[in-house]
Image (tube, rainbow, N blue to C red; front, side, top):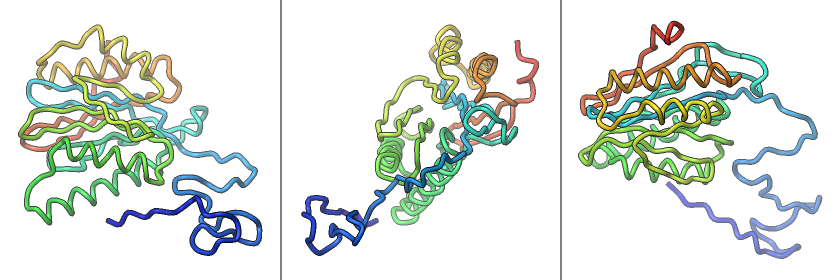
Length: 243
């Protein structure tokens, strides 16, 4: 990968990348990750969402709802898979604009595959989380706030990655528009060293609680189980009847 650096200190009239065009604006604007100001509002499809990551005695459980919306006001899709495998033993959630989140996952997955092809071994979770934070901070992915969960030789890991590139590891975490409600349920029911099945039940209850109040969350549940053996993603059939 190349590290592109633009010198923004060039004064007006200087030649080079930082020079001004006839309209008086630097020719390299808009900057990476921004959109031109067209003067009109854009309706961007967002996942809204509630996503949860929990470390367990067996590995990691990630649970997400299935709803995509336009600004949280109109449900544009009722069956979005908001968790994707990006590594032999790691998965990442989609949170924020759908296009930005999908682009982020494709880019990260490509880098992981390249690393494995070059070095002949899997990337560690610490390296993967650092890479994800760097991409979130410097890439054109709009506002995303994913959860990264994975298993490596050092243990079982869950990270939240903020739009500024901050990476925080915890035993469990929640991101998305329903996080305030989901956290209450998760704090009440979480216990250290739960089994995967126990963690799935807790995560499902937390997502269900969020869906009751958050208009950006709902329409079902996808669950990813991550162990030393790999990543398994499936829908949660009893979500609608969950008590």
